[in-house]
Length: 286
Image (tube, rainbow, N blue to C red; front, top):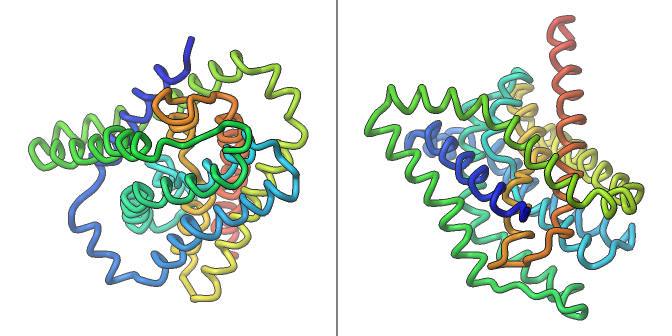
């Protein structure tokens, strides 16, 4: 079974669900809270890809994993980050705004960064990136479902609210299904590279949390904003990365998606631990 036929509907549903939660007025928060948004977007779109690039060189990853690690670093988290922000006692409105902005901005940044990364290490072994196909796929799978979700919300608010509740509950189980199928198909390759890739993706998520927290403190974000920034920078959209890696229209290379799978697993472990720590701190009044 080609996992692309599993990941495409999952990604489409997740982006549609994101659209259901958006309001046009959410974008007005850019002007009311510029610093938290600026810090988070800088972390998502600049710092994390640069850290991934440095780690890929440091760990001497093979080209296919090198590109895969940079790819997952270029795909900011979707709707799940809003749920994690709520669990952590963060600024959920800020989280929704950041998710919307990053989803739109990465329509441009992903083709630019991935084209550069592919030329850097991939073309020498025959890995190429059809940029036009990538842009078309992102428009169909990322932008169109979001716009449909927004339209559905304004046309039928009550139905959109009910649909959002269902899709939000389905999101995590669907991702688990995707990861399970992918692992079963590529378990030998994953196990053979688990040591180096496991260390690499763990370092990436921990550095993402550390750097985003530091940047957020430097601009004096309040604790709720800081928690949201940490989660938004650390949480990546594995479904999007897998769709780009495995799509026959783009890279057509399922091994390239392995860093995204491993990152998704470690991301949830680390961020759930982070949520538990900050919730405990709240209870103790720290």
